[in-house]
Image (tube, rainbow, N blue to C red):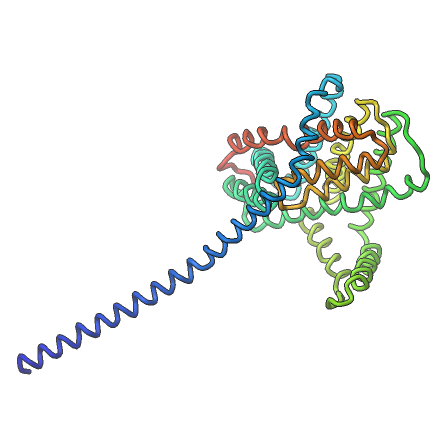
Length: 365
């Protein structure tokens, strides 16, 4: 091979190498662009979400300020009533810890308590905080040694059971509303509240242990939805889907599902009793059934993800609902402030403490 041919061959190889390098660089660039595209979309979605949250907080700010402005009247509450509300919220948290401990089938309590406090606190301060709080709790539990797959299933089952029970509570207020009774003392109110939650526990036990009532509810909901949304594709599998979710809950809790149900009812019972105690402490005794409806409405409003923990929506909604229940506007504001003080604001610093003290590597299984 002559020198000229060797130079030509070398030039061809160099040119081929450059082309290959260019192709490789192009593939890398395309890969980076494809990887950056979801990040850019995620960033845009985050910015839009923050903007919606900011606008929502601006709109509900007057309600929040009105409720928080009631702190000057904190002297209207006796030290005993404040202690009672604190203990009731502690009992509500204790029921939640017990429920998660059953679902996770954990041996140690430390990771369950610490992760629940931290996740709950994050859910109350971050936009769309429910998902972020659940993700934080999941990471903390896995870091503490719990298996990832069963942890996801357990937290999902807990959320389904907890929210399902509170959605069923307004139905239990219908008989009391029809009766039209008015409660005149805290004791009578508390007894009615206990009766309501006893019925809730019994009804939930029936739905968890038998198929026919749940299938009937599913058919009624499916029929109502299809009639209201005639232009949408009709639902056909809602009753079976309800059974599937019920079976998933039972599979998670196993033979201890009755204890799990009792702790779920206790979680809402003590929370509801906190609101009743706040009303009784300022001398307000509306119908327990109407307070129950206001309480359930507040829990639904707390699920609105566009503000942290439903901030503003809960204050405005609960105040208005209590006023509809017969509570004076001033007392409604004051009772809402006291209830939110113990159920929303005080858990925030406790959540930080739970995150700091939670075990990171524990034999929690």
